[in-house]
Amino acid sequence: MDLIDTFFNGRVLWDSLPLLLMGLGTTLSLGILSIVLGLVGGLVLALLRLYGPPALSGLWVLYIDLFRAIPILVLLVIVYYALPFVGIRLSPFASATTALSLVSAAYSAEILRAGIQAIPRGQFEASQALGLSYWSMMGDIVLPQAVRIVIPPMTSNCINVMKDTALASVVAMPDLLKQATQAQALAANPTPLIGAAALYVLLLLPMVRAVGTLEKHFAKERR
Amino acid sequence: MQINDMQAGKAGRAASARPAARPIIAIRDLRKMYGSFCALSGINLDVAEGEVVVLLGPSGSGKSTLIRCINLLETYDSGTVTVDDVAVRPGPNLAAVRSEVGMVFQSFNLFPHMTVLRNVALAPIRVRKLAPKAAEERAMELLTRVGIAEQAGKFPGQLSGGQQQRVAIARALAMEPKILLFDEPTSALDPEMVGEVLDVMQSLARTGVTMVVVTHEMGFARRVADRVIFMERGQIVEEAKPEAFFSAPKEERARAFLQAVLNH
Ligand SMILES: Nc1ncnc2c1ncn2[C@@H]1O[C@H](COP(=O)(O)OP(=O)(O)O)[C@@H](O)[C@H]1O
Ligand SMILES: [Mg+2]
Image (tube, rainbow over all chains, first blue to last red):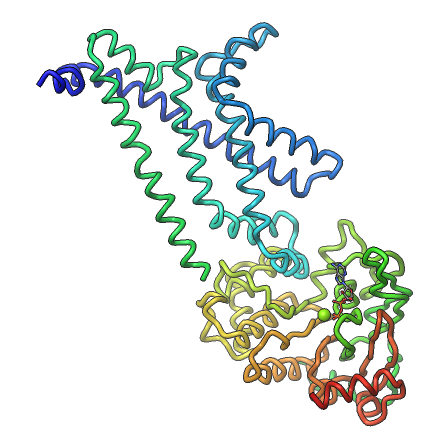
């Protein structure tokens, strides 16, 4: 009974719920904003890398590799604690969004590049032979097909971004984890931490499940 | 359509194997290297408006490379290609030139994520700025013409190879091109479907559209071509009217090729 009172204390959980839900809201806005910015950045990077001026392609590769290599926590700390020394002072939310988007863009770019390159050459040739413009070829023919291929890995990437939002608590951002630790200190009871863990799982489990389902679905479609 | 005019024109042309009229395709001294391998070594070729030219030759002789240079799907090292008096060059005019040159590929290359109807209607909507409704009506007409109107709502993956290739022909026709290029359009088909595609091509030839066809279907070449061109090792070895070519090829290499193809 002691164990239940310590980790699954109903009263403590109830009291901390408003704090936890506020934290969840922050986590969601940070995660969603970073995912969207990362997608847009990743698409631009992928197109630049594939079809941009060849002289600059090394630059995009360098960006993509660098931001996939650097630990997000290190990047976040640099953005929040180091950039102020050169006069760039970002709020915790902006710092976290910046770090997460920069990294997510690098991963998204790789996923999109692989997806675009998986489209057979004949699709490009048929589009060109019809006289379609570059934008129509990409928008009507290539990207819609690439999207099918990249949805499962993209969803995985979104899951990672959502998870990595928890790192933002180290720069004092009031996200779900930060609120939970605060509630824990307040109540002198770890139940809010368990509550936060449950909320993370509730949020991410459907996405994790979706990846598997989508992979199976697209595998069937491609037969 | 103006089928009668066209047939009259065809009869007029038949008097000489060489086109007399202004060429709609003019290829001059075309050279193409793959590394140190010479895929095209100085091709000169004129194709007259309304003419049906069949390219023959052994595998690897440069037929695909040549036909793909006409709409610049393949770049080349030197020489010029002119379509309807416009030089085919990279640049802002390229898409416009390409929209006048339809192409049918060996592997169909239909857009798998779109219905058959959408496949045919898309380019007129995007390039010719046709209203979607008008483009779809016209697409339906073309699908009727190639005999697959009832498949309009299906996806390409649900069709047989022969049906897919007929959709591909309708897609090319939707742009009302002056020229149609065919690169072995029946080579990927099961034998029982070859006929339905060749029939569509033969009826197209009668409408007066200019056609350049790479094929190994000798019967089609003999029946439909105005002129047969035999290629080997990146060169045009022999050009003749089909009757002359098939009954008495002048070149030894053409004779050997015909023997090999007809006896297989
Ligand atoms: N991308 C390529 N790289 C190197 N060699 C090529 C390439 N494409 C074609 N070739 C070569 O060029 C020659 C002509 O090819 P192609 O025009 O496809 O011949 P055909 O259509 O008459 O069979 C062949 O010998 C082929 O091996
Ligand atoms: Mg070929």
